[in-house]
Every structure is written in structure tokens, then in C-alpha cells.
Length: 195
View (cartoon, rainbow, N blue to C red):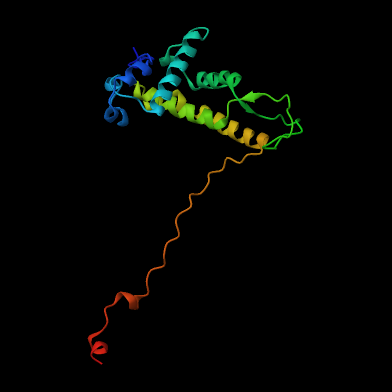
């Protein structure tokens, strides 16, 4: 039997529980899953829980239904493709006259898809949730090579189709002041002070 706890997040009822919390407990992150019901979860934790429950629902509705222990990278890819129907990002086909234009001047019949950044963040949250629920990192289907390659392919194709570069931006570092000249660091010699 697999030690994974399958989709056992408590039901989300934050409005009632948030009203009973003091401001001091709501500002601190929850240290463990057992105390999550007594303190407010961060936005990231809430999103991770919703994503985990959505993926669990997807597995239960799968034909035939799948258990998490039998889930593979191929099932994760199937899930990501399924989510495309709910996407809000216009991705132009190569034959579209607006292919490669970030701001097309007119509507076109190209499909809406999940944006690469959304998929990448989703996979990251699900990968973390899998391991938090007893999954081993080496068997994590969200970290499978096929999933990483799919995300890279989506990023590249959306970058070309929408004319948006996804290259990492270099962080700008504040300019450093040049070190003071060595003479400014040395105390004045006693011979020059006597003259």
C-alpha cells in the first residue's frame, strides 16, 4: 500500500474561520498541516490546496479512475492539456496574420490556452503538494522529464506565437561606489602634522 495521503486537505471554509482569528495569528504562516485549520493559510498555500483538490478530482473522474500512486508524468500531461479548455491566453496559429504580434489590432479565431507561466506555477505547486502528502521526490510525477519538456515546448511555442520573450531578466544591482584611494585610509603621519 502506498503511504501517500490522497487529497486529504480539509474543506476550505475560510470566511468563517478567518473572522475568529486574531490579527497576530493571521499574519504568521502555518507551521504544519495540523495547525492549518487554526490559522490563516497564505495565498500560495490556499492555491496549492485548491490545485491539489482539482487534480484529485481529475483523477477520480478519469476513465478508469486513477489512484495517485499509479499516476505518471503522462497523466500529468493529460491533465495540463485538459486545462487548456479553460485558458484565457490567445495563442496564434502560424497561419494567423497576427502570429508573433504581442498586441494584435483585431480579433482572430485562434484558440485560447493556458499561459505558460500559469502552467509552470501550477506544476510547481502540485509538485510541492505531492511531497507534502507523503510522496517521494524520486517518484513525483510532476517532476517527470516529460512534464519539464512539455512546459519548455509550451513556453517556446507561446513565445513565438505571441511575440513575447520569456528569457530571464537580469536583476539590476545598485551601482557600487569605488573604494576610497589608499591615502584616504591612512592616518596623517606625525612628521607632516608637526610642520
